[in-house]
Image (cartoon, rainbow, N blue to C red; front, side, top):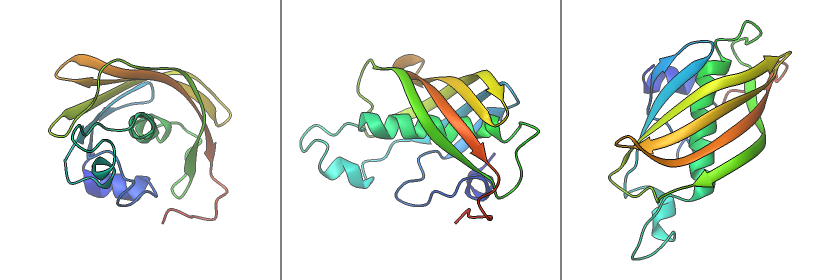
Length: 147
């Protein structure tokens, strides 16, 4: 899935669109890519002299990647939205810095009636940088608000 397909899928736009490509996705697993660039606005203040990607943005990038799995569920309708409703067991192992290529990989743990959980890992060159279990809710009654 290239950036044009991602833009159709997610309502996020600059500066909050945090994935560049979905490498693989089916109803159980996904792999997505984010190229981390020094030009991203959060690096101006996080932290001057030692820029690292904020943990909350790593979680958001993982959640955006996980949407690729959610859209493969039978209940998903075009124009629907996926809302992050919980973050469990989040761990940050090593900083993500400008120049890194972040690979986000996740597996659907549970899904029922629009509610689900995904276990996601963020890696750079195969090394685990962050992980979390994310809960989401699928809403198809948003009136087509996809931005």
